[in-house]
Length: 331
Length: 282
Ligand SMILES: [Fe+2]
Ligand SMILES: [Fe+2]
Figure 1 (cartoon, helix red, strand yellow):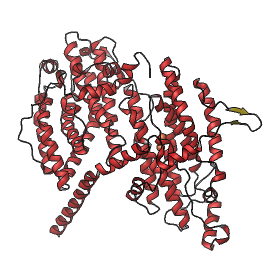
Figure 2 (cartoon, rainbow over the protein chains, first blue to last red):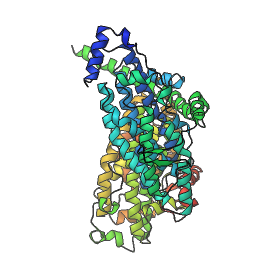
Figure 3 (tube, chains in turn green, blue):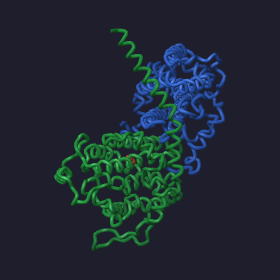
Figure 4 (tube, rainbow over the protein chains, first blue to last red):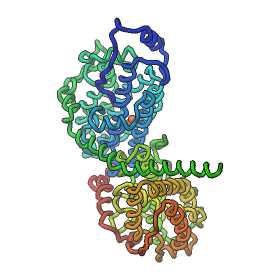
Protein backbone atom coordinates (compact mmCIF):
# COMPACT_ATOMS: atom_id res chain seq x y z
CA UNK A 1 0.00 0.00 0.00
CA UNK A 2 1.26 3.43 0.77
CA UNK A 3 3.10 1.50 3.45
CA UNK A 4 4.70 -1.57 1.91
CA UNK A 5 6.72 -4.18 3.76
CA UNK A 6 6.94 -2.22 7.00
CA UNK A 7 9.26 -4.06 9.36
CA UNK A 8 7.80 -4.56 12.81
CA UNK A 9 9.78 -5.02 16.02
CA UNK A 10 7.93 -7.19 18.46
CA UNK A 11 8.82 -9.68 21.15
CA UNK A 12 7.52 -13.21 20.83
CA UNK A 13 4.54 -14.11 22.95
CA UNK A 14 6.57 -15.95 25.56
CA UNK A 15 8.66 -12.87 26.35
CA UNK A 16 5.74 -10.51 27.02
CA UNK A 17 6.20 -8.46 30.17
CA UNK A 18 3.17 -7.70 32.37
CA UNK A 19 3.03 -4.18 30.90
CA UNK A 20 3.07 -5.54 27.38
CA UNK A 21 0.41 -8.05 28.25
CA UNK A 22 -1.83 -5.29 29.60
CA UNK A 23 -1.14 -3.20 26.51
CA UNK A 24 -2.11 -6.05 24.22
CA UNK A 25 -5.27 -6.58 26.24
CA UNK A 26 -6.29 -2.97 25.68
CA UNK A 27 -5.76 -3.34 21.96
CA UNK A 28 -7.70 -6.60 21.89
CA UNK A 29 -10.54 -4.80 23.66
CA UNK A 30 -10.60 -2.24 20.87
CA UNK A 31 -9.23 0.66 22.94
CA UNK A 32 -7.31 3.46 21.27
CA UNK A 33 -3.75 4.15 22.35
CA UNK A 34 -3.03 7.84 22.81
CA UNK A 35 0.33 9.63 22.56
CA UNK A 36 1.04 10.15 26.27
CA UNK A 37 0.26 6.56 27.19
CA UNK A 38 2.74 3.77 27.73
CA UNK A 39 3.45 1.69 24.66
CA UNK A 40 6.06 -0.93 23.81
CA UNK A 41 9.09 0.50 22.05
CA UNK A 42 8.52 -1.88 19.13
CA UNK A 43 4.97 -0.61 18.68
CA UNK A 44 6.22 2.98 18.62
CA UNK A 45 9.04 2.26 16.18
CA UNK A 46 6.87 0.21 13.86
CA UNK A 47 4.24 2.94 13.80
CA UNK A 48 6.84 5.60 13.01
CA UNK A 49 8.06 3.51 10.10
CA UNK A 50 4.56 2.90 8.82
CA UNK A 51 3.14 6.40 9.27
CA UNK A 52 6.38 7.92 7.99
CA UNK A 53 6.33 5.78 4.88
CA UNK A 54 2.70 6.65 4.37
CA UNK A 55 3.44 10.39 4.76
CA UNK A 56 6.36 10.18 2.33
CA UNK A 57 4.09 8.44 -0.17
CA UNK A 58 1.61 11.31 0.00
CA UNK A 59 4.20 13.95 -0.84
CA UNK A 60 6.20 11.97 -3.38
CA UNK A 61 2.78 11.03 -4.74
CA UNK A 62 2.24 14.69 -5.62
CA UNK A 63 4.85 14.43 -8.33
CA UNK A 64 3.45 12.03 -10.96
CA UNK A 65 0.19 13.96 -11.12
CA UNK A 66 1.92 17.29 -10.63
CA UNK A 67 3.59 16.44 -13.92
CA UNK A 68 0.31 17.14 -15.75
CA UNK A 69 -1.10 20.14 -13.92
CA UNK A 70 0.35 22.64 -16.38
CA UNK A 71 -0.94 20.55 -19.29
CA UNK A 72 -4.46 19.91 -18.00
CA UNK A 73 -6.84 20.26 -20.94
CA UNK A 74 -9.44 22.62 -19.46
CA UNK A 75 -9.55 25.18 -16.67
CA UNK A 76 -11.91 23.00 -14.70
CA UNK A 77 -9.72 19.91 -15.06
CA UNK A 78 -6.71 21.96 -14.06
CA UNK A 79 -8.44 23.22 -10.93
CA UNK A 80 -9.62 19.74 -9.98
CA UNK A 81 -6.19 18.19 -10.48
CA UNK A 82 -4.39 20.96 -8.65
CA UNK A 83 -6.80 20.70 -5.73
CA UNK A 84 -6.32 16.94 -5.69
CA UNK A 85 -2.55 17.14 -5.61
CA UNK A 86 -2.84 19.83 -2.96
CA UNK A 87 -4.97 17.43 -0.90
CA UNK A 88 -2.12 14.93 -1.04
CA UNK A 89 0.23 17.53 0.43
CA UNK A 90 -2.37 18.02 3.16
CA UNK A 91 -2.44 14.27 3.80
CA UNK A 92 1.32 14.40 4.17
CA UNK A 93 0.91 17.15 6.75
CA UNK A 94 -1.64 15.22 8.84
CA UNK A 95 0.51 12.12 8.78
CA UNK A 96 3.75 13.87 9.70
CA UNK A 97 1.82 15.43 12.57
CA UNK A 98 0.58 12.00 13.64
CA UNK A 99 4.17 10.73 13.52
CA UNK A 100 5.33 13.69 15.59
CA UNK A 101 3.12 12.52 18.45
CA UNK A 102 5.41 9.48 18.58
CA UNK A 103 8.46 11.63 19.14
CA UNK A 104 9.91 12.03 15.65
CA UNK A 105 10.00 15.40 13.90
CA UNK A 106 9.00 16.10 10.33
CA UNK A 107 12.55 17.23 9.56
CA UNK A 108 13.98 13.96 10.87
CA UNK A 109 11.59 11.99 8.69
CA UNK A 110 12.48 14.14 5.67
CA UNK A 111 16.13 13.48 6.30
CA UNK A 112 15.45 9.75 6.28
CA UNK A 113 13.47 9.99 3.06
CA UNK A 114 16.10 12.11 1.35
CA UNK A 115 18.94 9.83 2.38
CA UNK A 116 17.05 6.77 1.18
CA UNK A 117 16.72 5.26 4.67
CA UNK A 118 12.94 5.41 4.43
CA UNK A 119 10.83 4.41 1.47
CA UNK A 120 7.64 5.59 -0.17
CA UNK A 121 5.16 3.51 -2.15
CA UNK A 122 6.59 1.84 -5.25
CA UNK A 123 3.71 3.10 -7.37
CA UNK A 124 5.05 6.64 -7.56
CA UNK A 125 8.15 5.52 -9.41
CA UNK A 126 6.15 4.98 -12.58
CA UNK A 127 5.89 7.74 -15.19
CA UNK A 128 2.74 9.62 -16.18
CA UNK A 129 2.81 9.66 -19.95
CA UNK A 130 -0.61 10.87 -21.03
CA UNK A 131 -3.58 12.74 -19.64
CA UNK A 132 -5.37 9.42 -19.20
CA UNK A 133 -2.82 8.61 -16.50
CA UNK A 134 -4.50 11.26 -14.36
CA UNK A 135 -7.63 9.20 -14.64
CA UNK A 136 -5.88 5.89 -14.05
CA UNK A 137 -4.08 7.16 -10.96
CA UNK A 138 -7.20 8.58 -9.34
CA UNK A 139 -9.20 5.50 -10.15
CA UNK A 140 -6.63 2.78 -9.43
CA UNK A 141 -4.00 4.28 -7.15
CA UNK A 142 -6.30 6.30 -4.93
CA UNK A 143 -8.68 3.36 -5.18
CA UNK A 144 -6.03 0.97 -3.88
CA UNK A 145 -5.10 3.44 -1.16
CA UNK A 146 -8.71 3.51 -0.01
CA UNK A 147 -8.79 -0.30 0.27
CA UNK A 148 -6.06 -0.11 2.85
CA UNK A 149 -6.96 3.11 4.57
CA UNK A 150 -10.63 2.52 5.25
CA UNK A 151 -9.83 -0.31 7.69
CA UNK A 152 -7.00 1.79 9.16
CA UNK A 153 -9.62 4.22 10.44
CA UNK A 154 -10.01 1.56 13.16
CA UNK A 155 -6.29 1.21 13.81
CA UNK A 156 -5.20 1.11 17.45
CA UNK A 157 -3.18 4.32 17.51
CA UNK A 158 -5.56 7.26 18.04
CA UNK A 159 -3.82 10.02 16.05
CA UNK A 160 -3.23 7.68 13.10
CA UNK A 161 -6.85 6.50 13.12
CA UNK A 162 -8.12 10.09 13.21
CA UNK A 163 -5.79 11.16 10.39
CA UNK A 164 -7.18 8.27 8.35
CA UNK A 165 -10.76 9.41 8.85
CA UNK A 166 -9.98 12.82 7.35
CA UNK A 167 -7.87 11.35 4.58
CA UNK A 168 -10.37 8.70 3.54
CA UNK A 169 -13.05 11.28 2.83
CA UNK A 170 -10.78 13.03 0.37
CA UNK A 171 -9.44 9.84 -1.16
CA UNK A 172 -12.84 8.59 -2.19
CA UNK A 173 -13.43 11.96 -3.80
CA UNK A 174 -10.14 11.58 -5.67
CA UNK A 175 -11.14 8.18 -6.89
CA UNK A 176 -14.41 9.48 -8.28
CA UNK A 177 -12.58 12.31 -10.04
CA UNK A 178 -10.14 9.85 -11.56
CA UNK A 179 -12.94 7.62 -12.73
CA UNK A 180 -14.67 10.61 -14.27
CA UNK A 181 -11.55 11.37 -16.33
CA UNK A 182 -11.38 7.72 -17.42
CA UNK A 183 -15.03 7.83 -18.39
CA UNK A 184 -14.52 10.91 -20.57
CA UNK A 185 -11.51 9.33 -22.22
CA UNK A 186 -13.00 5.88 -22.67
CA UNK A 187 -16.12 7.34 -24.25
CA UNK A 188 -14.26 10.03 -26.19
CA UNK A 189 -12.47 9.95 -29.52
CA UNK A 190 -10.58 6.91 -30.73
CA UNK A 191 -7.30 8.54 -29.67
CA UNK A 192 -8.66 9.20 -26.19
CA UNK A 193 -9.91 5.64 -25.85
CA UNK A 194 -6.48 4.37 -26.80
CA UNK A 195 -4.86 6.60 -24.20
CA UNK A 196 -7.28 5.29 -21.57
CA UNK A 197 -6.55 1.66 -22.44
CA UNK A 198 -2.83 2.32 -22.48
CA UNK A 199 -3.01 3.96 -19.04
CA UNK A 200 -4.85 0.94 -17.65
CA UNK A 201 -2.29 -1.36 -19.26
CA UNK A 202 0.58 0.47 -17.60
CA UNK A 203 -0.96 1.05 -14.17
CA UNK A 204 -2.76 -2.24 -13.56
CA UNK A 205 0.11 -4.36 -12.26
CA UNK A 206 1.90 -1.56 -10.43
CA UNK A 207 -1.43 -0.92 -8.65
CA UNK A 208 -1.61 -4.58 -7.59
CA UNK A 209 1.92 -4.24 -6.24
CA UNK A 210 0.80 -1.44 -3.95
CA UNK A 211 -0.54 -4.00 -1.49
CA UNK A 212 2.89 -5.53 -1.06
CA UNK A 213 3.98 -9.13 -1.61
CA UNK A 214 1.98 -12.05 -0.36
CA UNK A 215 1.85 -12.23 3.44
CA UNK A 216 3.14 -15.79 3.24
CA UNK A 217 6.55 -14.18 2.75
CA UNK A 218 6.14 -11.50 5.38
CA UNK A 219 7.47 -12.09 8.87
CA UNK A 220 6.27 -8.72 10.12
CA UNK A 221 2.59 -8.93 9.33
CA UNK A 222 1.53 -11.03 12.29
CA UNK A 223 2.89 -8.67 14.93
CA UNK A 224 1.47 -5.63 13.14
CA UNK A 225 -1.90 -7.30 12.91
CA UNK A 226 -1.85 -8.20 16.61
CA UNK A 227 -1.16 -4.55 17.34
CA UNK A 228 -3.93 -3.51 14.94
CA UNK A 229 -1.71 -1.27 12.91
CA UNK A 230 -2.28 -3.58 9.99
CA UNK A 231 -5.87 -4.66 9.67
CA UNK A 232 -5.91 -7.07 6.74
CA UNK A 233 -3.43 -9.22 4.92
CA UNK A 234 -1.95 -7.95 1.70
CA UNK A 235 -3.58 -10.75 -0.26
CA UNK A 236 -7.03 -10.04 1.17
CA UNK A 237 -6.80 -6.40 0.17
CA UNK A 238 -5.43 -7.17 -3.27
CA UNK A 239 -8.27 -9.61 -3.92
CA UNK A 240 -10.83 -7.07 -2.74
CA UNK A 241 -9.31 -4.47 -5.03
CA UNK A 242 -9.43 -6.75 -8.05
CA UNK A 243 -13.01 -7.78 -7.27
CA UNK A 244 -14.14 -4.18 -7.10
CA UNK A 245 -12.11 -2.84 -9.98
CA UNK A 246 -12.78 -5.38 -12.72
CA UNK A 247 -16.47 -4.48 -13.10
CA UNK A 248 -15.50 -0.80 -13.14
CA UNK A 249 -13.11 -1.48 -16.02
CA UNK A 250 -15.86 -3.38 -17.83
CA UNK A 251 -18.22 -0.46 -17.39
CA UNK A 252 -15.62 1.76 -19.04
CA UNK A 253 -15.33 -0.71 -21.90
CA UNK A 254 -11.65 -1.19 -21.16
CA UNK A 255 -9.76 -4.46 -20.94
CA UNK A 256 -7.79 -5.41 -17.85
CA UNK A 257 -4.39 -6.51 -19.19
CA UNK A 258 -4.59 -10.01 -17.74
CA UNK A 259 -5.57 -12.82 -20.12
CA UNK A 260 -6.06 -15.19 -17.18
CA UNK A 261 -8.47 -12.97 -15.32
CA UNK A 262 -11.68 -14.90 -14.70
CA UNK A 263 -14.52 -15.11 -12.22
CA UNK A 264 -14.18 -18.06 -9.95
CA UNK A 265 -17.68 -19.16 -8.99
CA UNK A 266 -16.50 -21.40 -6.15
CA UNK A 267 -14.36 -18.80 -4.44
CA UNK A 268 -16.73 -15.97 -5.24
CA UNK A 269 -13.72 -13.96 -6.36
CA UNK A 270 -11.78 -13.21 -9.51
CA UNK A 271 -8.73 -15.30 -10.25
CA UNK A 272 -5.97 -13.06 -11.52
CA UNK A 273 -2.30 -13.02 -12.42
CA UNK A 274 0.14 -11.83 -9.78
CA UNK A 275 2.28 -8.85 -10.68
CA UNK A 276 5.94 -9.39 -11.47
CA UNK A 277 7.46 -9.40 -7.98
CA UNK A 278 10.98 -9.18 -9.35
CA UNK A 279 10.03 -5.87 -10.87
CA UNK A 280 8.55 -4.79 -7.54
CA UNK A 281 11.76 -5.52 -5.64
CA UNK A 282 13.81 -3.79 -8.31
CA UNK A 283 11.64 -0.68 -7.96
CA UNK A 284 12.10 -0.78 -4.16
CA UNK A 285 15.82 -1.11 -4.71
CA UNK A 286 15.80 2.13 -6.65
CA UNK A 287 15.66 0.71 -10.15
CA UNK A 288 12.16 1.77 -11.14
CA UNK A 289 11.59 4.04 -14.12
CA UNK A 290 11.39 7.26 -12.08
CA UNK A 291 13.06 6.64 -8.71
CA UNK A 292 15.84 9.10 -9.35
CA UNK A 293 13.55 11.82 -10.68
CA UNK A 294 11.07 11.47 -7.86
CA UNK A 295 13.50 11.44 -4.98
CA UNK A 296 15.68 13.96 -6.78
CA UNK A 297 12.76 16.36 -7.10
CA UNK A 298 12.01 16.10 -3.38
CA UNK A 299 15.63 16.60 -2.40
CA UNK A 300 15.93 19.56 -4.74
CA UNK A 301 12.76 21.17 -3.37
CA UNK A 302 14.11 20.74 0.15
CA UNK A 303 17.61 22.00 -0.61
CA UNK A 304 16.42 24.91 -2.75
CA UNK A 305 14.01 25.87 -0.01
CA UNK A 306 16.63 25.96 2.76
CA UNK A 307 17.29 29.71 2.48
CA UNK A 308 13.54 30.35 2.50
CA UNK A 309 12.96 28.37 5.68
CA UNK A 310 16.07 29.90 7.27
CA UNK A 311 14.82 33.37 6.39
CA UNK A 312 11.47 32.76 8.02
CA UNK A 313 13.11 31.30 11.11
CA UNK A 314 15.54 34.19 11.40
CA UNK A 315 12.66 36.64 11.18
CA UNK A 316 10.72 34.75 13.84
CA UNK A 317 13.75 34.91 16.16
CA UNK A 318 14.19 38.63 15.56
CA UNK A 319 10.51 39.30 16.10
CA UNK A 320 10.56 37.35 19.35
CA UNK A 321 13.64 39.25 20.53
CA UNK A 322 11.95 42.56 19.65
CA UNK A 323 8.84 41.60 21.59
CA UNK A 324 10.95 40.65 24.56
CA UNK A 325 12.90 43.92 24.40
CA UNK A 326 9.69 45.92 24.18
CA UNK A 327 8.29 44.06 27.14
CA UNK A 328 11.43 44.58 29.21
CA UNK A 329 11.46 48.29 28.34
CA UNK A 330 7.84 48.59 29.42
CA UNK A 331 8.50 47.04 32.83
CA UNK B 1 -7.34 21.78 4.89
CA UNK B 2 -9.09 23.63 2.12
CA UNK B 3 -9.70 21.90 -1.15
CA UNK B 4 -12.04 22.15 -4.06
CA UNK B 5 -15.52 21.84 -2.59
CA UNK B 6 -16.97 19.85 -5.43
CA UNK B 7 -16.15 18.37 -8.77
CA UNK B 8 -18.10 20.66 -10.96
CA UNK B 9 -17.45 24.30 -11.45
CA UNK B 10 -20.53 26.30 -10.61
CA UNK B 11 -22.13 28.02 -13.55
CA UNK B 12 -19.78 30.89 -14.18
CA UNK B 13 -22.50 33.19 -15.48
CA UNK B 14 -24.35 33.09 -12.17
CA UNK B 15 -21.16 33.65 -10.19
CA UNK B 16 -20.80 37.00 -11.86
CA UNK B 17 -23.44 38.41 -9.54
CA UNK B 18 -25.87 39.50 -12.21
CA UNK B 19 -28.58 37.26 -13.48
CA UNK B 20 -28.25 38.04 -17.12
CA UNK B 21 -27.44 40.33 -19.96
CA UNK B 22 -30.65 42.35 -19.50
CA UNK B 23 -29.48 43.74 -16.20
CA UNK B 24 -26.11 44.80 -17.52
CA UNK B 25 -26.51 46.76 -20.72
CA UNK B 26 -22.75 47.08 -21.10
CA UNK B 27 -22.50 43.41 -21.95
CA UNK B 28 -24.54 43.80 -25.14
CA UNK B 29 -23.41 47.31 -26.03
CA UNK B 30 -22.05 46.95 -29.57
CA UNK B 31 -20.09 50.18 -29.37
CA UNK B 32 -18.23 48.93 -26.32
CA UNK B 33 -17.75 45.40 -27.54
CA UNK B 34 -14.17 45.57 -28.82
CA UNK B 35 -12.57 47.45 -25.90
CA UNK B 36 -14.69 45.63 -23.31
CA UNK B 37 -13.66 42.26 -24.71
CA UNK B 38 -10.02 43.32 -24.74
CA UNK B 39 -10.18 44.62 -21.22
CA UNK B 40 -11.84 41.43 -19.94
CA UNK B 41 -9.08 39.41 -21.59
CA UNK B 42 -6.55 41.54 -19.72
CA UNK B 43 -8.25 40.65 -16.46
CA UNK B 44 -8.60 36.95 -17.28
CA UNK B 45 -5.17 36.56 -18.85
CA UNK B 46 -3.45 38.10 -15.84
CA UNK B 47 -5.05 35.58 -13.53
CA UNK B 48 -4.65 32.72 -16.01
CA UNK B 49 -0.95 33.23 -16.55
CA UNK B 50 -0.12 33.88 -12.91
CA UNK B 51 -2.13 30.86 -11.78
CA UNK B 52 -0.27 28.80 -14.35
CA UNK B 53 3.10 29.89 -13.00
CA UNK B 54 2.00 29.24 -9.42
CA UNK B 55 0.72 25.79 -10.30
CA UNK B 56 4.22 24.89 -11.50
CA UNK B 57 5.29 24.89 -7.85
CA UNK B 58 2.91 22.11 -6.85
CA UNK B 59 4.98 19.37 -5.22
CA UNK B 60 8.15 21.44 -5.31
CA UNK B 61 7.55 24.05 -2.63
CA UNK B 62 10.13 24.84 0.07
CA UNK B 63 7.82 23.58 2.84
CA UNK B 64 4.55 21.66 2.83
CA UNK B 65 2.59 24.63 4.18
CA UNK B 66 3.94 26.84 1.41
CA UNK B 67 3.23 24.21 -1.23
CA UNK B 68 -0.39 24.15 -0.10
CA UNK B 69 -0.66 27.93 0.07
CA UNK B 70 0.73 28.39 -3.44
CA UNK B 71 -1.80 25.90 -4.76
CA UNK B 72 -4.56 27.74 -2.93
CA UNK B 73 -3.65 31.02 -4.56
CA UNK B 74 -3.42 29.34 -7.94
CA UNK B 75 -6.87 27.80 -7.43
CA UNK B 76 -8.39 31.16 -6.56
CA UNK B 77 -6.88 32.68 -9.68
CA UNK B 78 -8.10 29.86 -11.91
CA UNK B 79 -11.58 30.58 -10.55
CA UNK B 80 -11.22 34.26 -11.43
CA UNK B 81 -10.00 33.33 -14.89
CA UNK B 82 -13.08 31.23 -15.50
CA UNK B 83 -15.32 34.15 -14.59
CA UNK B 84 -13.45 36.87 -16.50
CA UNK B 85 -12.95 34.86 -19.67
CA UNK B 86 -16.51 33.53 -19.66
CA UNK B 87 -17.74 37.09 -19.54
CA UNK B 88 -15.26 38.06 -22.26
CA UNK B 89 -16.71 35.34 -24.48
CA UNK B 90 -20.18 36.55 -23.78
CA UNK B 91 -19.32 40.15 -24.59
CA UNK B 92 -17.58 39.08 -27.78
CA UNK B 93 -20.73 37.26 -28.79
CA UNK B 94 -19.13 34.61 -30.99
CA UNK B 95 -19.81 31.67 -28.77
CA UNK B 96 -16.30 31.28 -27.40
CA UNK B 97 -16.11 29.77 -23.91
CA UNK B 98 -13.55 30.58 -21.23
CA UNK B 99 -11.70 27.40 -22.24
CA UNK B 100 -11.73 28.40 -25.91
CA UNK B 101 -10.16 31.70 -24.99
CA UNK B 102 -7.59 30.16 -22.67
CA UNK B 103 -6.60 27.25 -24.84
CA UNK B 104 -7.07 28.37 -28.42
CA UNK B 105 -5.59 31.84 -28.66
CA UNK B 106 -2.01 32.49 -29.68
CA UNK B 107 0.56 34.69 -27.97
CA UNK B 108 -0.25 37.93 -29.75
CA UNK B 109 -3.84 37.91 -28.57
CA UNK B 110 -2.92 37.33 -24.93
CA UNK B 111 -3.33 40.47 -22.87
CA UNK B 112 -1.56 39.80 -19.55
CA UNK B 113 1.19 42.08 -18.30
CA UNK B 114 4.70 40.78 -18.88
CA UNK B 115 5.60 40.58 -15.20
CA UNK B 116 3.31 37.59 -14.73
CA UNK B 117 4.76 35.45 -17.48
CA UNK B 118 8.35 35.61 -16.23
CA UNK B 119 9.68 32.24 -15.04
CA UNK B 120 9.23 31.36 -11.36
CA UNK B 121 12.90 31.23 -10.49
CA UNK B 122 13.34 30.85 -6.75
CA UNK B 123 10.79 31.61 -4.05
CA UNK B 124 12.14 35.17 -3.81
CA UNK B 125 11.00 35.80 -7.36
CA UNK B 126 7.71 34.01 -6.93
CA UNK B 127 6.96 35.85 -3.69
CA UNK B 128 8.02 39.28 -4.88
CA UNK B 129 6.09 39.01 -8.15
CA UNK B 130 3.03 37.93 -6.22
CA UNK B 131 3.31 40.88 -3.87
CA UNK B 132 3.85 43.47 -6.61
CA UNK B 133 0.85 42.14 -8.50
CA UNK B 134 -1.39 41.53 -5.48
CA UNK B 135 -1.05 45.17 -4.41
CA UNK B 136 -2.18 46.26 -7.87
CA UNK B 137 -4.83 43.56 -8.16
CA UNK B 138 -6.43 44.37 -4.79
CA UNK B 139 -6.53 48.10 -5.54
CA UNK B 140 -8.10 47.41 -8.93
CA UNK B 141 -10.72 44.96 -7.68
CA UNK B 142 -11.66 47.33 -4.89
CA UNK B 143 -12.52 49.97 -7.49
CA UNK B 144 -14.18 47.45 -9.77
CA UNK B 145 -16.60 46.42 -7.03
CA UNK B 146 -18.29 49.73 -7.76
CA UNK B 147 -18.27 49.29 -11.53
CA UNK B 148 -21.27 50.46 -13.54
CA UNK B 149 -21.18 46.99 -15.08
CA UNK B 150 -22.99 44.81 -12.57
CA UNK B 151 -21.37 41.72 -13.98
CA UNK B 152 -17.89 43.17 -13.53
CA UNK B 153 -18.77 44.43 -10.07
CA UNK B 154 -20.05 41.00 -9.07
CA UNK B 155 -16.93 39.16 -10.19
CA UNK B 156 -14.70 41.79 -8.61
CA UNK B 157 -16.46 41.64 -5.27
CA UNK B 158 -16.03 37.90 -5.11
CA UNK B 159 -12.41 37.99 -6.26
CA UNK B 160 -11.53 40.83 -3.92
CA UNK B 161 -12.18 38.71 -0.84
CA UNK B 162 -9.60 36.21 -2.02
CA UNK B 163 -7.12 38.73 -3.36
CA UNK B 164 -7.21 40.70 -0.10
CA UNK B 165 -5.97 37.54 1.53
CA UNK B 166 -3.36 37.00 -1.19
CA UNK B 167 -2.01 40.47 -0.52
CA UNK B 168 -1.91 39.90 3.23
CA UNK B 169 0.00 36.70 2.72
CA UNK B 170 2.48 37.99 0.16
CA UNK B 171 3.08 41.18 2.17
CA UNK B 172 3.78 39.10 5.22
CA UNK B 173 6.22 36.88 3.35
CA UNK B 174 8.01 39.86 1.80
CA UNK B 175 8.48 41.36 5.26
CA UNK B 176 9.72 38.13 6.77
CA UNK B 177 12.10 37.26 3.94
CA UNK B 178 13.30 40.84 3.55
CA UNK B 179 14.05 41.07 7.26
CA UNK B 180 15.18 37.45 7.60
CA UNK B 181 18.74 36.33 6.96
CA UNK B 182 21.34 38.24 4.97
CA UNK B 183 20.82 35.75 2.17
CA UNK B 184 17.04 36.05 2.09
CA UNK B 185 17.33 39.84 2.25
CA UNK B 186 19.78 39.92 -0.66
CA UNK B 187 17.60 37.63 -2.77
CA UNK B 188 14.53 39.77 -2.16
CA UNK B 189 16.32 43.01 -2.96
CA UNK B 190 17.89 41.61 -6.13
CA UNK B 191 14.52 40.35 -7.27
CA UNK B 192 12.79 43.62 -6.49
CA UNK B 193 15.41 45.45 -8.56
CA UNK B 194 14.95 43.01 -11.43
CA UNK B 195 11.15 43.21 -11.44
CA UNK B 196 10.82 46.94 -10.93
CA UNK B 197 11.09 47.79 -14.66
CA UNK B 198 8.10 45.50 -15.29
CA UNK B 199 5.80 47.11 -12.73
CA UNK B 200 5.04 50.28 -14.68
CA UNK B 201 3.07 48.39 -17.28
CA UNK B 202 0.26 47.77 -14.80
CA UNK B 203 -0.43 51.51 -14.65
CA UNK B 204 -0.13 52.43 -18.31
CA UNK B 205 -3.45 53.44 -19.80
CA UNK B 206 -4.43 53.24 -23.46
CA UNK B 207 -7.54 53.58 -25.62
CA UNK B 208 -9.07 50.44 -24.16
CA UNK B 209 -8.68 51.76 -20.65
CA UNK B 210 -10.04 55.13 -21.70
CA UNK B 211 -13.16 53.51 -23.14
CA UNK B 212 -13.65 51.51 -19.95
CA UNK B 213 -13.21 54.58 -17.80
CA UNK B 214 -15.59 56.55 -20.00
CA UNK B 215 -18.27 53.87 -19.57
CA UNK B 216 -17.64 53.76 -15.82
CA UNK B 217 -16.68 50.10 -16.04
CA UNK B 218 -13.11 50.38 -14.78
CA UNK B 219 -10.85 53.08 -13.39
CA UNK B 220 -7.99 54.46 -15.47
CA UNK B 221 -5.00 52.33 -14.41
CA UNK B 222 -2.92 55.36 -13.50
CA UNK B 223 -5.46 56.17 -10.78
CA UNK B 224 -4.43 53.00 -8.95
CA UNK B 225 -0.85 54.10 -8.65
CA UNK B 226 -1.09 56.15 -5.41
CA UNK B 227 -2.66 53.28 -3.49
CA UNK B 228 -0.13 50.83 -4.92
CA UNK B 229 2.72 53.17 -4.03
CA UNK B 230 1.43 53.48 -0.50
CA UNK B 231 1.19 49.71 0.06
CA UNK B 232 4.51 49.02 -1.60
CA UNK B 233 6.30 51.68 0.42
CA UNK B 234 4.79 50.52 3.69
CA UNK B 235 5.59 46.85 3.20
CA UNK B 236 9.04 47.31 1.68
CA UNK B 237 9.94 49.65 4.48
CA UNK B 238 9.01 47.09 7.09
CA UNK B 239 10.87 44.48 5.05
CA UNK B 240 14.01 46.67 5.14
CA UNK B 241 14.03 46.64 1.34
CA UNK B 242 14.84 49.69 -0.75
CA UNK B 243 12.65 50.92 -3.57
CA UNK B 244 14.79 50.70 -6.71
CA UNK B 245 15.89 53.87 -8.38
CA UNK B 246 15.12 52.64 -11.85
CA UNK B 247 12.46 53.40 -14.37
CA UNK B 248 9.39 51.26 -13.76
CA UNK B 249 7.92 51.42 -17.27
CA UNK B 250 10.68 49.74 -19.25
CA UNK B 251 9.18 46.34 -20.07
CA UNK B 252 5.70 46.78 -21.41
CA UNK B 253 3.43 45.70 -24.20
CA UNK B 254 1.78 42.64 -22.72
CA UNK B 255 -1.53 44.45 -22.49
CA UNK B 256 -1.56 44.86 -26.25
CA UNK B 257 -0.10 41.47 -27.13
CA UNK B 258 3.63 42.19 -27.13
CA UNK B 259 5.12 39.60 -24.82
CA UNK B 260 8.40 38.22 -23.60
CA UNK B 261 9.73 35.00 -25.11
CA UNK B 262 8.45 33.10 -22.09
CA UNK B 263 4.74 33.27 -22.88
CA UNK B 264 5.07 31.13 -26.00
CA UNK B 265 6.43 28.27 -23.92
CA UNK B 266 3.70 28.61 -21.34
CA UNK B 267 1.08 28.33 -24.08
CA UNK B 268 2.87 25.47 -25.82
CA UNK B 269 2.59 23.52 -22.60
CA UNK B 270 -0.80 24.70 -21.44
CA UNK B 271 -2.53 24.31 -24.80
CA UNK B 272 -0.89 21.07 -25.85
CA UNK B 273 -3.87 18.74 -25.46
CA UNK B 274 -6.41 21.11 -26.96
CA UNK B 275 -4.13 21.69 -29.94
CA UNK B 276 -3.09 18.07 -30.43
CA UNK B 277 -6.62 16.68 -30.20
CA UNK B 278 -8.90 19.34 -31.65
CA UNK B 279 -12.55 18.85 -30.90
CA UNK B 280 -12.04 16.26 -28.18
CA UNK B 281 -13.96 16.70 -24.98
CA UNK B 282 -12.14 16.23 -21.66
FE1 LIG C 1 -3.64 10.93 -0.19
FE1 LIG D 1 -5.53 10.86 -3.03
